Length: 84
Image (tube, rainbow, N blue to C red):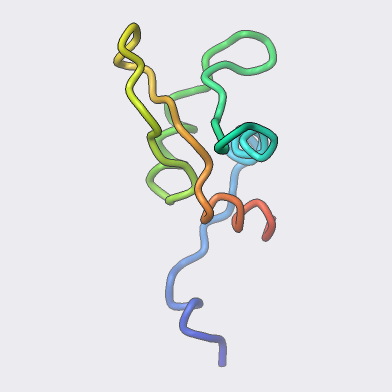
């Protein structure tokens, strides 16, 4: 029988989620980028899915762009990356 943690359904990271979250590992405070390596905004669905699973959390509001979600990697996100 598995431990109590198995009661909580584990969600698998998509390639896009994994790629985005990994970028927070090397940034101060786990800051996650707003843009990808080609200068395109990270897709909002990726950001919101990571937030809903607890892998990322909003960090602060950008006063110049209040609709942008500035996020940071959570401990749960670090653990999800370690598992996958």
